[in-house]
Length: 76
Figure: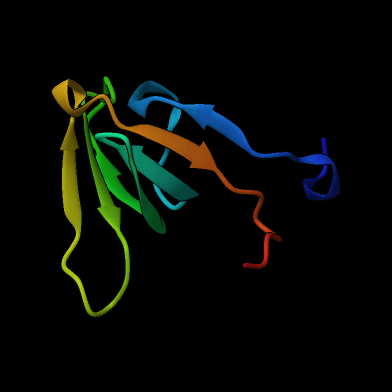
């Protein structure tokens, strides 16, 4: 599948990898878009870098965060 065919997919932390651009939703709120900065091997802890003005934010499995993986060519 090339990047032109990719669509957005919503997943939990187990399906992520470093560098992916994601939209984060947790606690019934849309928290915005950022990049996966790091994560544990089992995806139970995920660090998202939302922007240079904010430090990265850690999400635990208990937060029940959902990540919408954005296509690499997306424009917002």
